[in-house]
Image (cartoon, rainbow over all chains, first blue to last red; front, side):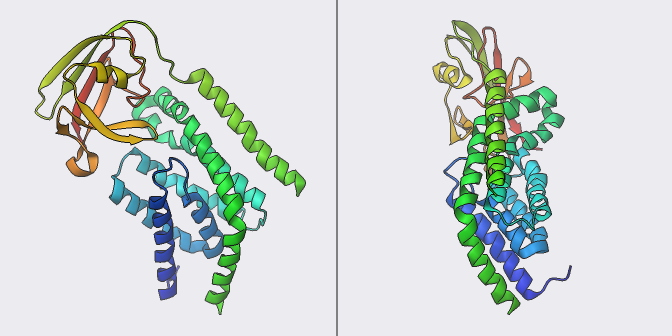
Length: 166
Length: 132
């Protein structure tokens, strides 16, 4: 994939939007806009997301340290982009809110995978169970955020896309 | 369209209920009563200090707070306190390239100090650990 100057600018802007929103909301546990933005950017800017996610993950690691959570990021965010891309022809806010909600709800479940290696099955299971209340908050938060923001942001994204094409 | 709404919201509600049941059944449950435990702190110089105490604490954090002479603090997070400083010695991953690892009876704790249950006879270790 050959990148133009416009692509590189867009990628930088997308990473900046994700990081700024993440830092802005860091004091509200498990309520985040990263899921929402990665889904919207995948829908509207397609393959450019392949550069956005690695940049975002790398920046997170450099800011907060390359801990176990960082290993989860390596596969969880790309998985979200992949699922979004597979459903890209769907235009129902309910479907997107459900996918966002499921992602938040299952974040801990799939995030426990690295703990199988370090702590065994029981350790991973215990880690997941301990975080279930926060996964529920994450899932509900993602669902509500998508329900509230999908339509207005989609409107803005359509305008941006039209400008880019023009 | 209406079906999609019902399926989407319904699936989430069912999963949340299922997860809540799993949490209720399998979460670590605290033990109540008088317990004799030890908390050993091993610092960077590998010097050891042992605190023996009788406690009714249900979780490790409360027991640590009760241990006379043991001082600690850290950053509060969604998983409880992330201990950064023990007895004046800092082990912050980003700054020091190290962390405090918590062990119970020779094995790494699966929980943070706010949710690590305390049982009679437990031997806890708080060890200064350099990141690899």
